[in-house]
Amino acid sequence: MRTIDKFFTAVGGIGTAGAIVSGFLGQRVASLIMLASLFLVWQVWLTMEIIILRNAAAILGTQSNIRPRLSYLKDPLIISSARMNPLKISADFMLWSECTVMLWVQVPPKGQGLRDSPNNRYLLAHHTGKAEQKNEAYRNQFVLRHSSTHHRWEFLTSDGSAKYGSSLVANDGLEPGWHHFLISWDRTRPRTVFLIDGGSGGSDVSNASFERWPEQVDKLFVGTWVSEWSGHFCEARLLQLNIFDRFLTANAPEVRDSLRLKPRA
Image: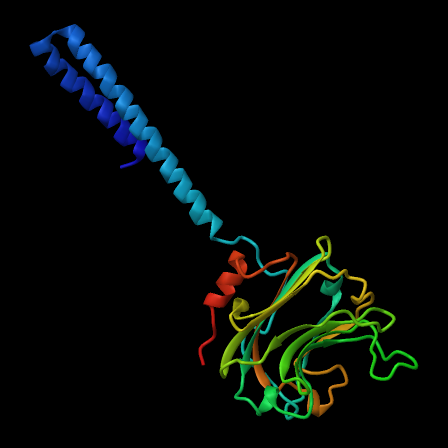
């Protein structure tokens, strides 16, 4: 029964009870009792309605109606030098004011595939060419990789002059299995966030300006460096590359939903 139906049922019950009471105590006393009872029922009904509305708002607050602007890798894909099958997508999202990139990665044991040495292994890679007279400096770089030198996860960017900004890093202490990587930024704050497994697997935050950020974009390579040299392939399974046009962090419903959908081994 709906709350409003219960309210009118209670009012009807009070009326019936009032008629009975008036026969014993008189009309005036019965009227006073009925008025007091109606006031009490009214207060209870309002309280119930407030509780119901508050609970409904809480439920709606935990359900996200924001969907990825771009979505790739809906099925697990092994990206390896043996297959030579990197995914190449438009990098226009790098110029958005707000953005969140999320990706599931099946991380192998240390010393294997994505975590081997001596080469950096790339999950995401973009640049628009090498800078003149600057050894190993690339213009408009945007990369997420496993560093062979530091044995850690790194996210770094450069501008159109090949000047690098601050790297966001997370130590590599992950157990083998599926892990969730997130990069999120908001140019207006400014703020950039790097999270693994919502932060439990590593995190880093930067409040630096976006002066050292890609100014021009081409194609983003997923699973390898732009040159597609075999030593830079991630040699790992990737899944659910989702790109949102919102700045999202670990507490956002979209992120919590994605973490709950952890792939099976």
